[in-house]
Length: 202
Ligand code: HEM
Ligand code: HEM
Image 1: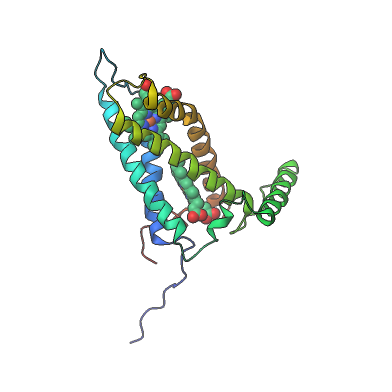
Image 2 (image 1 turned 60 degrees about the vertical axis):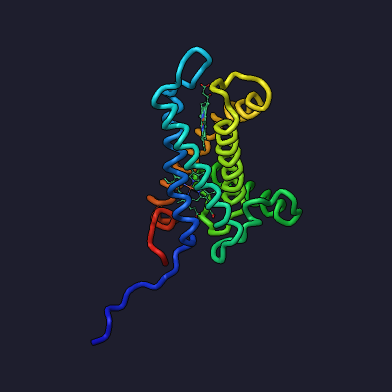
């Protein structure tokens, strides 16, 4: 008897990208929420429970972002990684500028900008988000290995904490903007969330 036909369509994003994106998104949400209630160790006080969750959640975020980078560098499907980092190519920069103007024109007409699989603006923002979260995870992880129980200590601890604390609000902005747009595209049928949030190996 012939087997039931089923869809063999390949997902837009490869398995490694999808699994590391899911882990990273959950870890970053955990980092932002725990940052609201954590109390870091100080010379005269121990850190609280939420700080420990932040610490180990942050190390997990570092592992997921390392995997994500492997996925981006060695990917075989979806757009070339150069779309995410257009900053050194005149051709890519000019495509980014045209796409940005297209987005502004659509917004002025109160329209949702057209969805495009290889959109230069969305890809460039994804690249910036990746660099941002890499800087957060790396500064936190370096702090984990070099700290002596006081985030206010000077020297290298001061440098990594300066980076960590000053980029923190951008991570909130990225998460809200990125997740918000993902929901808009899902409900306007441009890109289903399962393209990214699926653990199937196809
Ligand atoms: C702060 C945590 C997050 C980071 C750093 C992040 C980062 C990224 C990056 C870099 C990409 C591009 C991947 C590629 O093209 O290879 C991406 C795609 C995507 N993300 Fe996230 N993400 C986060 C959270 C989320 C959340 C919470 C959602 C859902 C509500 C989401 C939904 C999506 C979707 C649907 C795509 C596919 C977009 C497309 O193919 O056009 N992300 N994300
Ligand atoms: C992607 C990973 C991470 C994200 C998104 C993140 C996010 C944040 C945020 C939003 C804050 C609050 C900033 C503020 O109060 O203005 C913070 C503070 C902090 N984080 Fe992280 N974090 C990450 C990883 C780590 C790791 C691995 C450690 C290692 C121990 C760490 C240690 C700290 C410390 C010590 C503080 C300062 C606490 C204080 O002095 O009040 N973070 N982080």
